[in-house]
Amino acid sequence: MSNTNSDPFRFSTIAHRNHHYLSPLSIGKARGLLRSLTSGLSAQDVVLDAGCGKAALLREALDMSPAHGVGVDINPRFLDEARCLFSDASPGDSRLALLNCPLLEHSPPPHGYAAIICVGSVHAFGSFDECLRRSGDWLTPGGRLLIADGYWKQPPSQAYLDVLGGTADEFVSHAENAQRASKHGYAVLRTATSSDDEWDEYEGEYCSAMMQYLASHPDDPDSAEFSLRMQRWHQAYLYWGRATLGFGYYLLARR
Image (tube, rainbow, N blue to C red):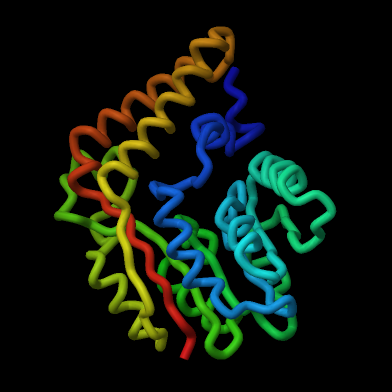
């Protein structure tokens, strides 16, 4: 009997067990984006990481600034790992709070957030546009938002959409993502995209972590299902995804 129903995050937790960031992002690119995001933050400021996963970006934002951080995610195992990593790296530092709940159920601080990170987690808000709208409500005047999501490099094939379980209107182009931010009243400060190398590293580690886990746990009740799922996913990445699906980063300021 499958364990998936008792832990809906199990596949993702295993496949991401060796990832630092849960997105196709290199350390160098992350540092550049975070420097722009955290510039000028004070000890009175609070940074939100929406759908934070292991909160790697939030933890690094706190390394770069005296601000406090709030990470919200619905995967308790990712949050446990984030707590351990932060505690080990910064013993005695109480600036990080990690909340295990749906994002929209948490309570923002009365004075708002000085910065918000939402990298690959716009679904926590409901959509890309809802992330832009709600973040605008939560940010202090002049506050910054680092939002990252998928975009189409080219029109997707129906076969690829079938694997994704998505639709062609789920994403737009990179330029159109930036335009959506402008329409919501943000100033676009900086944009970037994941490179092919970053994608290959992310997807390769994703597949490798799962297949290595299954090889060392042959009696896992989810073994056959997870193996088929991962092989189908990685094949789709090679056939279609690498040339079709991009990942864009948009550093924005609330006007």
